Image 1 (spheres, helix red, strand yellow):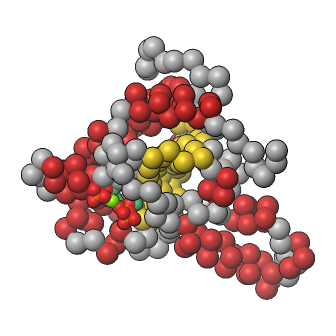
Image 2: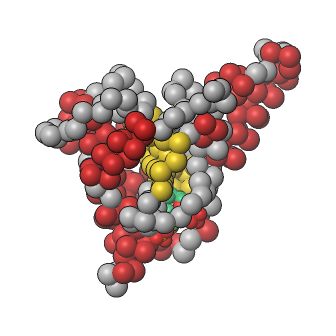
Image 3: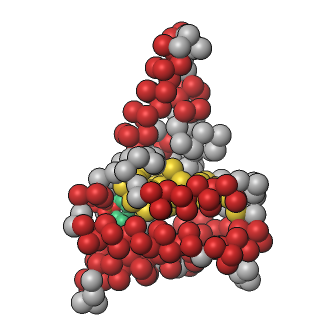
Amino acid sequence: MYDNIPQFEVLPQHIGFIMDGNGRWAKMRGLERSAGHKEGAKTFRKICEYCADVGIKHMTFYAFSTENWSRPQKEVSALMKLFKEYLLEGDERTAENDIKQMRLKFIGEREGLPKDLLRLIERAEKTTAKYSHVTVNIALNYGGRAEITHAVKEIAQKVKDGELSVDDISQETVDNYIYTAGQPDPDIIVRPSGEFRLSNFLTWQSAYSEFWFSDVLWPDFTEEDVNEILFDYQKRNRRFGGV
Ligand code: IPE
Ligand code: IPE
Ligand code: MG
């Protein structure tokens, strides 16, 4: 549990983190890219815990995109191994999730993931399903366009089966078929590493999100950076098209 958490007047309900810059972090140190991912995974644990302590109820961490399969096999394998290690932390993880009442949810395409990883994902989701205090979404094999396509297919199937009429399809219908159904949209999306793009992250959900960019590489990201984001967020004037 963190002490000395600053007082924030307004907190985002949902923060999205694009965990980018692991490769460059490693390269700067003459290390293999996988070493950067390992360090990035540590940062993920730290930031996730800190946000929970601050009182953020929903977080989404972009861990692996549908486009990341195009990376060298060696790097992809190292990443899959890290995901498994995280999920294998078993009892430790359960205790932590217990304390923080943290629910884990994996968003993204299940198809294409290694079977053993899938089993661990399902186990983690099942054991944490009872928690409702904090929801941690891990976007793995995730792509915003794939997500929307998936939703469209499911809706089309409902229409085909006569369970839904075309006239009843609304934005709320789409909301109900995306992976984050039932959760608020991200209030702010954070991208470190000096890139100014979404890279297929939360395409539907980010319509009115605020953005926060910085040059920090994800493995160097700290609780102080989170504080900076939260102080900055308080000053944003969100209008949602109004005045
Ligand atoms: C983000 O770091 C992690 C994943 C995409 C899995 P990168 O690996 O993209 O790091 P850079 O952008 O090459 O520095
Ligand atoms: C986005 O980072 C995906 C994740 C952080 C998991 P990338 O490094 O894959 O994005 P691009 O290729 O720079 O757009
Ligand atoms: Mg990158």
